[in-house]
Length: 145
Image (cartoon, rainbow, N blue to C red; front, side, top):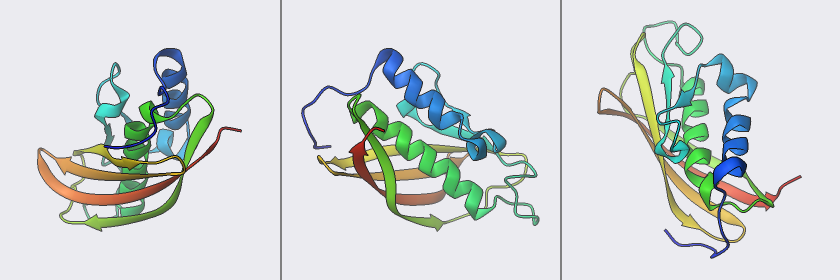
């Protein structure tokens, strides 16, 4: 990963950002949570329940997108300064296999490149260690309002 040398979010400042992401109504409704409370960048998980389902026994693509975008932000957050935020500029989701009802989907993001104004993040989603989706996210790094 490459990027600016300014110190990234940590401690209470990072926790506040994580709580904000997890508090987004859609994220809450989908029961998206952290894989590791002590390491938000480790990724996120989502149970495939009725709301996250597609009606045919699998996950809905919009629910997968919400999970993977959240995981991408969680991976990027430690690289942001206290005066920065990141918003999705573009994303591409590839669904590779079904994530069945009642299963947990795990999404893990990797910051591929972090510049002053943009960040490039790759996210993979698995069910029981089986790859089910990939997402490429471009985040615009903007001033925090």
